[in-house]
Length: 268
Image 1 (cartoon, one colour):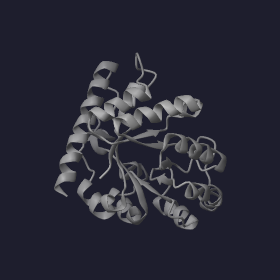
Image 2 (image 1 turned 60 degrees about the vertical axis):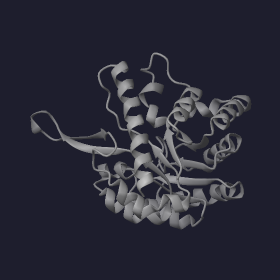
Image 3 (image 1 turned 45 degrees about the horizontal axis):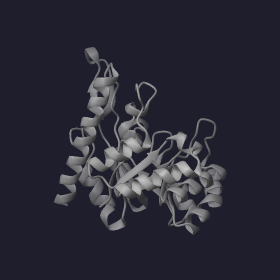
Protein backbone atom coordinates (compact mmCIF):
# COMPACT_ATOMS: atom_id res chain seq x y z
CA UNK A 1 0.00 0.00 0.00
CA UNK A 2 1.41 3.41 -1.00
CA UNK A 3 2.01 5.76 1.91
CA UNK A 4 3.17 9.30 1.31
CA UNK A 5 3.48 12.87 2.49
CA UNK A 6 2.22 16.09 0.99
CA UNK A 7 3.59 19.60 0.97
CA UNK A 8 0.75 20.17 3.47
CA UNK A 9 2.68 18.01 5.96
CA UNK A 10 5.27 20.82 5.85
CA UNK A 11 2.76 23.68 5.61
CA UNK A 12 4.43 26.01 8.12
CA UNK A 13 7.97 25.03 7.20
CA UNK A 14 7.47 26.15 3.59
CA UNK A 15 5.48 29.24 4.52
CA UNK A 16 6.64 32.85 4.45
CA UNK A 17 6.94 32.63 8.23
CA UNK A 18 9.81 30.15 8.00
CA UNK A 19 13.33 31.64 8.43
CA UNK A 20 14.49 29.30 5.65
CA UNK A 21 11.58 27.63 3.88
CA UNK A 22 12.16 23.99 2.99
CA UNK A 23 12.89 23.21 -0.65
CA UNK A 24 11.39 20.31 -2.57
CA UNK A 25 14.69 18.48 -2.15
CA UNK A 26 14.47 19.02 1.63
CA UNK A 27 10.93 17.61 1.72
CA UNK A 28 11.87 14.64 -0.42
CA UNK A 29 14.73 13.79 1.92
CA UNK A 30 12.42 14.07 4.95
CA UNK A 31 9.93 11.79 3.18
CA UNK A 32 12.67 9.24 2.55
CA UNK A 33 13.87 9.41 6.16
CA UNK A 34 10.38 8.41 7.30
CA UNK A 35 10.31 5.46 4.86
CA UNK A 36 7.35 6.91 2.95
CA UNK A 37 7.36 6.14 -0.76
CA UNK A 38 5.15 8.87 -2.25
CA UNK A 39 5.39 12.66 -2.17
CA UNK A 40 2.54 14.86 -3.40
CA UNK A 41 3.60 18.34 -4.53
CA UNK A 42 0.23 19.91 -3.74
CA UNK A 43 -0.80 23.58 -4.09
CA UNK A 44 2.83 24.54 -4.65
CA UNK A 45 2.61 27.11 -7.48
CA UNK A 46 6.38 27.57 -7.54
CA UNK A 47 6.58 24.29 -9.47
CA UNK A 48 4.98 26.09 -12.44
CA UNK A 49 8.06 28.32 -12.71
CA UNK A 50 10.58 25.46 -12.78
CA UNK A 51 12.63 25.02 -15.93
CA UNK A 52 12.85 21.61 -17.56
CA UNK A 53 16.29 21.27 -15.99
CA UNK A 54 14.95 21.94 -12.49
CA UNK A 55 12.05 19.54 -13.02
CA UNK A 56 14.54 16.88 -14.15
CA UNK A 57 16.55 17.48 -10.96
CA UNK A 58 13.45 17.03 -8.79
CA UNK A 59 12.56 13.82 -10.62
CA UNK A 60 16.11 12.51 -10.34
CA UNK A 61 16.19 13.25 -6.61
CA UNK A 62 12.89 11.46 -6.09
CA UNK A 63 14.02 8.50 -8.17
CA UNK A 64 17.30 8.21 -6.24
CA UNK A 65 15.33 8.11 -2.96
CA UNK A 66 12.78 5.59 -4.22
CA UNK A 67 9.95 8.12 -4.03
CA UNK A 68 7.04 8.34 -6.47
CA UNK A 69 5.81 11.87 -7.19
CA UNK A 70 2.24 13.15 -7.41
CA UNK A 71 0.99 16.67 -8.13
CA UNK A 72 -1.79 18.90 -6.85
CA UNK A 73 -3.38 22.12 -8.08
CA UNK A 74 -6.74 23.90 -8.18
CA UNK A 75 -9.22 24.54 -10.96
CA UNK A 76 -10.67 22.74 -13.98
CA UNK A 77 -9.90 25.09 -16.85
CA UNK A 78 -8.44 22.88 -19.61
CA UNK A 79 -5.36 25.04 -20.27
CA UNK A 80 -4.36 24.91 -16.62
CA UNK A 81 -5.00 21.18 -16.29
CA UNK A 82 -2.96 20.52 -19.43
CA UNK A 83 -0.11 22.58 -17.96
CA UNK A 84 -0.15 20.27 -14.95
CA UNK A 85 -0.36 17.24 -17.20
CA UNK A 86 2.86 18.38 -18.88
CA UNK A 87 4.45 18.91 -15.46
CA UNK A 88 3.29 15.46 -14.36
CA UNK A 89 4.86 13.87 -17.42
CA UNK A 90 8.19 15.62 -16.82
CA UNK A 91 8.15 14.55 -13.15
CA UNK A 92 7.02 10.99 -13.84
CA UNK A 93 3.82 11.58 -11.84
CA UNK A 94 0.75 9.49 -12.60
CA UNK A 95 -1.71 11.37 -10.38
CA UNK A 96 -2.82 15.01 -10.25
CA UNK A 97 -5.22 16.29 -7.60
CA UNK A 98 -7.39 19.34 -8.28
CA UNK A 99 -10.40 21.20 -6.90
CA UNK A 100 -13.38 22.59 -8.79
CA UNK A 101 -13.07 26.20 -7.65
CA UNK A 102 -10.35 28.82 -7.82
CA UNK A 103 -10.32 32.40 -6.55
CA UNK A 104 -11.77 33.64 -9.85
CA UNK A 105 -13.73 30.66 -11.18
CA UNK A 106 -16.56 28.72 -9.55
CA UNK A 107 -18.10 26.54 -12.26
CA UNK A 108 -21.50 24.94 -11.85
CA UNK A 109 -21.81 21.22 -12.49
CA UNK A 110 -22.66 21.48 -16.19
CA UNK A 111 -19.79 23.86 -16.93
CA UNK A 112 -17.32 21.76 -14.94
CA UNK A 113 -18.35 18.61 -16.80
CA UNK A 114 -17.85 20.36 -20.14
CA UNK A 115 -14.41 21.69 -19.19
CA UNK A 116 -13.23 18.35 -17.85
CA UNK A 117 -14.45 16.52 -20.95
CA UNK A 118 -11.95 18.69 -22.83
CA UNK A 119 -9.01 17.95 -20.54
CA UNK A 120 -9.47 14.41 -19.23
CA UNK A 121 -8.96 12.59 -22.58
CA UNK A 122 -5.40 13.94 -22.70
CA UNK A 123 -4.85 12.59 -19.17
CA UNK A 124 -6.13 9.21 -20.29
CA UNK A 125 -3.86 9.19 -23.33
CA UNK A 126 -0.80 9.79 -21.14
CA UNK A 127 -1.82 7.40 -18.38
CA UNK A 128 -2.37 10.08 -15.71
CA UNK A 129 -5.35 10.12 -13.33
CA UNK A 130 -7.02 13.33 -12.14
CA UNK A 131 -8.71 13.43 -8.72
CA UNK A 132 -11.14 16.12 -7.54
CA UNK A 133 -10.98 16.73 -3.80
CA UNK A 134 -13.91 16.69 -1.40
CA UNK A 135 -14.15 20.02 0.40
CA UNK A 136 -16.60 22.49 1.86
CA UNK A 137 -17.01 24.77 -1.17
CA UNK A 138 -18.65 22.02 -3.22
CA UNK A 139 -21.29 19.57 -2.05
CA UNK A 140 -20.53 15.88 -2.37
CA UNK A 141 -23.63 15.57 -4.58
CA UNK A 142 -22.24 18.15 -7.02
CA UNK A 143 -18.74 16.69 -6.94
CA UNK A 144 -20.06 13.24 -7.78
CA UNK A 145 -22.33 14.69 -10.47
CA UNK A 146 -19.21 16.10 -12.13
CA UNK A 147 -17.22 12.86 -11.84
CA UNK A 148 -20.04 10.65 -13.11
CA UNK A 149 -20.94 13.20 -15.77
CA UNK A 150 -17.46 13.01 -17.28
CA UNK A 151 -17.48 9.22 -16.81
CA UNK A 152 -13.81 8.41 -17.31
CA UNK A 153 -11.62 5.91 -15.43
CA UNK A 154 -8.99 8.67 -15.38
CA UNK A 155 -11.18 11.04 -13.31
CA UNK A 156 -12.13 10.28 -9.73
CA UNK A 157 -12.32 11.64 -6.20
CA UNK A 158 -9.51 12.68 -3.87
CA UNK A 159 -11.10 11.83 -0.53
CA UNK A 160 -10.52 14.10 2.46
CA UNK A 161 -13.58 13.62 4.67
CA UNK A 162 -12.61 16.25 7.24
CA UNK A 163 -12.90 19.06 4.70
CA UNK A 164 -16.63 18.59 4.23
CA UNK A 165 -17.48 18.99 7.92
CA UNK A 166 -17.63 22.76 7.41
CA UNK A 167 -20.46 22.14 4.94
CA UNK A 168 -22.30 20.16 7.63
CA UNK A 169 -21.68 16.90 5.78
CA UNK A 170 -20.87 13.93 8.02
CA UNK A 171 -17.48 12.38 7.22
CA UNK A 172 -19.04 8.90 7.24
CA UNK A 173 -21.58 10.00 4.62
CA UNK A 174 -18.87 11.55 2.43
CA UNK A 175 -16.82 8.36 2.64
CA UNK A 176 -19.78 6.15 1.84
CA UNK A 177 -20.90 8.22 -1.14
CA UNK A 178 -17.49 8.70 -2.73
CA UNK A 179 -15.86 5.32 -1.97
CA UNK A 180 -16.46 3.76 -5.43
CA UNK A 181 -14.81 6.74 -7.12
CA UNK A 182 -11.81 7.36 -4.84
CA UNK A 183 -8.42 7.55 -6.59
CA UNK A 184 -6.42 9.25 -3.80
CA UNK A 185 -6.80 9.73 -0.04
CA UNK A 186 -5.65 12.64 2.11
CA UNK A 187 -5.20 11.39 5.66
CA UNK A 188 -5.58 13.97 8.41
CA UNK A 189 -7.39 13.76 11.72
CA UNK A 190 -9.51 16.54 13.19
CA UNK A 191 -11.53 17.40 16.27
CA UNK A 192 -13.88 20.01 17.73
CA UNK A 193 -12.77 21.75 20.90
CA UNK A 194 -14.64 24.27 23.00
CA UNK A 195 -13.55 27.91 22.78
CA UNK A 196 -12.69 29.89 25.91
CA UNK A 197 -15.68 30.19 28.21
CA UNK A 198 -17.36 27.37 26.28
CA UNK A 199 -18.53 29.90 23.71
CA UNK A 200 -18.60 27.96 20.44
CA UNK A 201 -16.14 25.46 19.01
CA UNK A 202 -12.92 25.31 17.01
CA UNK A 203 -12.53 22.68 14.31
CA UNK A 204 -8.82 21.97 13.89
CA UNK A 205 -6.35 19.19 13.30
CA UNK A 206 -5.06 16.76 15.90
CA UNK A 207 -2.62 13.84 15.91
CA UNK A 208 -3.84 10.91 13.85
CA UNK A 209 -5.98 8.56 15.91
CA UNK A 210 -6.96 11.16 18.51
CA UNK A 211 -9.85 12.80 16.65
CA UNK A 212 -13.01 12.10 14.67
CA UNK A 213 -11.53 10.47 11.56
CA UNK A 214 -12.81 6.89 11.29
CA UNK A 215 -9.70 5.64 9.54
CA UNK A 216 -10.62 1.95 9.73
CA UNK A 217 -14.07 2.64 8.33
CA UNK A 218 -12.64 4.75 5.52
CA UNK A 219 -10.16 2.06 4.50
CA UNK A 220 -12.80 -0.67 4.67
CA UNK A 221 -15.09 1.36 2.40
CA UNK A 222 -12.47 2.47 -0.13
CA UNK A 223 -10.13 -0.53 -0.30
CA UNK A 224 -7.06 1.50 -1.30
CA UNK A 225 -4.67 -1.45 -1.44
CA UNK A 226 -6.80 -3.31 -3.97
CA UNK A 227 -7.17 -0.16 -6.09
CA UNK A 228 -3.56 1.04 -5.83
CA UNK A 229 -4.70 4.25 -4.14
CA UNK A 230 -2.10 6.37 -2.31
CA UNK A 231 -2.66 7.54 1.26
CA UNK A 232 -1.14 11.01 1.66
CA UNK A 233 -0.47 12.50 5.11
CA UNK A 234 -1.58 16.10 5.68
CA UNK A 235 -2.25 18.24 8.77
CA UNK A 236 -4.48 21.00 10.07
CA UNK A 237 -1.95 22.21 12.61
CA UNK A 238 -2.79 25.61 14.17
CA UNK A 239 0.01 28.16 14.53
CA UNK A 240 1.63 27.70 17.95
CA UNK A 241 2.63 31.34 18.53
CA UNK A 242 6.14 31.01 17.12
CA UNK A 243 7.89 29.26 14.26
CA UNK A 244 10.20 26.97 16.22
CA UNK A 245 7.44 25.37 18.28
CA UNK A 246 5.12 25.15 15.30
CA UNK A 247 7.79 23.45 13.15
CA UNK A 248 8.69 21.07 15.98
CA UNK A 249 5.08 20.02 16.40
CA UNK A 250 4.56 19.75 12.65
CA UNK A 251 7.44 17.27 12.42
CA UNK A 252 6.14 15.41 15.48
CA UNK A 253 2.67 15.05 13.95
CA UNK A 254 4.15 13.83 10.67
CA UNK A 255 6.30 11.21 12.37
CA UNK A 256 3.34 10.11 14.48
CA UNK A 257 1.06 9.85 11.41
CA UNK A 258 3.54 7.73 9.47
CA UNK A 259 4.15 5.41 12.43
CA UNK A 260 0.42 5.09 13.09
CA UNK A 261 -0.41 4.40 9.45
CA UNK A 262 2.33 1.80 9.14
CA UNK A 263 0.91 0.03 12.21
CA UNK A 264 -2.66 0.23 10.90
CA UNK A 265 -1.65 -0.96 7.43
CA UNK A 266 0.10 -3.99 8.85
CA UNK A 267 -2.98 -4.89 10.90
CA UNK A 268 -5.40 -4.80 7.93
